[in-house]
Length: 399
Image (cartoon, rainbow, N blue to C red; front, side, top):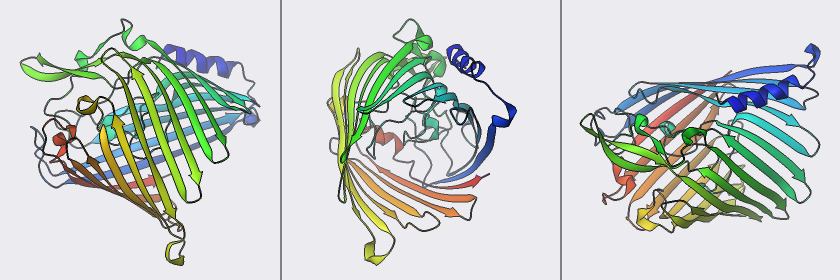
């Protein structure tokens, strides 16, 4: 763990009076069993299988003291995968100390911070690194060492970040799915900054809610979480080398709730050595409440993603329309269903997805995920996944 994060946590704990009768402790855990079924063998070497089993363990340990003004959270993560050794990994999702005051908070250690309002991609979410071995959704993130001061004012919340230490993106291995024909060689990774992983990044964000609107403005300067790739030869085999550049980014995320309408927008401008570009993700969700006089709600959503770099963009959504429907039964089992399709206007490719969730009893949850890819243009990133259509069932046991 980064030394600065350790020092910050230790200093915070040592300065707090801690009597035994003031301490509250809670331990919980989740065990996830994941079964994936693929429609066909993959298109690249070592993908000649049609099923995969994976098990993950996510404990959480929580301490609270000083009349709930201080707390410490530890969330490790472990996964064992049947096929891909690179997907079998461990991580510290969170190990942080938080101190709460009347109008400010300080948070330090390994943490996950989420920014964003849109459904299909979150352009403004730049603090944490993606844990891509967990899937394509970009929803899973690695814990980021940080010092975060949050100031609460009548005119909004200001968050200031110092990010000491960089974490590289994770990648599936030779036996993994959802990759290109070439694997990324982690040992060949390079950085624009001479400080490499030790470069200290900084960020700031202002957020505020007023009337029908929720708005956030951010600024980030430091190592780009999304690397550039170069084909190199290593031991007679072509592999991909990741290079992490420095970047500066400003952006805004906004959401408006107007009757049944939910309007969403994320806009960024990024300056890096390769590109200076503008990108946006905008859309809406309209919800029909109590359909057919039941407790169920049905939401219809549409979003458009644009990237000024066009076909040269490294992002999957550079000129894409996303359509979807979200059904929430609002029953005691919290049953829900999300169906969506993304159509690329540049490459004419499509990606269909289904996700359903339902609680079983008090301690179980079942999730069904399915995805189908369709792409003909080899320049389209989606073309790497055209033989990775899958159905995945996940059973979560909570303790």
